[in-house]
Length: 426
Ligand code: S3P
Image 1 (cartoon, protein in one colour):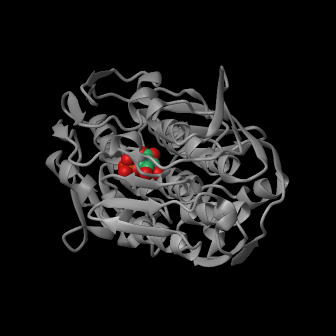
Image 2 (cartoon, helix red, strand yellow; image 1 turned 120 degrees about the vertical axis):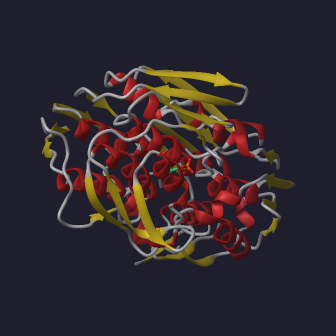
Image 3 (cartoon, helix red, strand yellow; image 1 turned 135 degrees about the horizontal axis):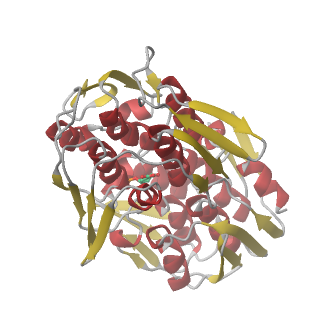
């Protein structure tokens, strides 16, 4: 599907993003592992999370969609293997978290994904899970999907593991498998990544001890079975980032994004934008953090990799950098190459189509800002099965001189109402 995004004259209004994607996946998985009924309010309506929902059904959990919440009932004797492949679609989070969750489900499992996910390495979860006694196989040395995961009957081995690249997905896979282990599992990370798995398992009654250690953290998890819980999912800050950047780079905008999850590992992009001179106001309430963003003159900056540990917000920050005065350098963003698409080359291609100079320097992304979005060229962009690239391109088009986005349907994997929400601001 092609979407043409026209330049926007004035942008005003309030946006409510879908429920946080990371919390939504985990709420479904933890509820499925528990015995009895859990409820989830505010679950993301994106296709990635829908895929996780169908998978827990395939594994035997009962899921009903009630008016304003989802009810998940886990089985007394636990989940069981499905007789059909577990379809992870476009979602790396589904596949990597699931690989760990399956440590609690003895038997043989088959996991598959779409053409984008089929290019993404799963060796990062296979290495620790194999050490715990779970057999995993995939294609080639980087272990590309489809995957076969074979889990022995009885306990698996506990593990002390240092995650080699900052990755919340790898940390989470090990912790989920650790629920079924024969002792305490310990995961160390050198940079603090999102803490949803450890926080939510603790809320579900599992003993988890988490300690900060320099820039990183060590998490110890005792085995056990999660208890049912009533989950409330706040808004997704990574989706809010698109509208917050739009507010900052558009010439006549005031946009508010409400009730967002406020985990510090997820809000580094706000600090970066503030450092660039964005007029951003944050207001915290029990429902989450609300962010108001207004037209601003931005200046370039250097973004250290620890500021955006999972690099999700780098493409949209690169669009902000394209509208800024001066150079912006994103340091050590090699992980961009193995997301839903190669976001390093994809971002450079998008920025060049706007008439902005951008390049790779080793593992850094360097952007020479144009000084204002009003100088962006009108463009065409192909979004290679990558929702965040669709939204980044749409923001550049609305703030600049418009553009055509090919493959825009992929936006539904995380934010089905994105284009309607964008239209509501005009
Ligand atoms: C996620 C972790 C991140 C992020 C992804 C969601 C999660 O990946 O990119 O969108 O929910 O655990 P990393 O594993 O690279 O941190």
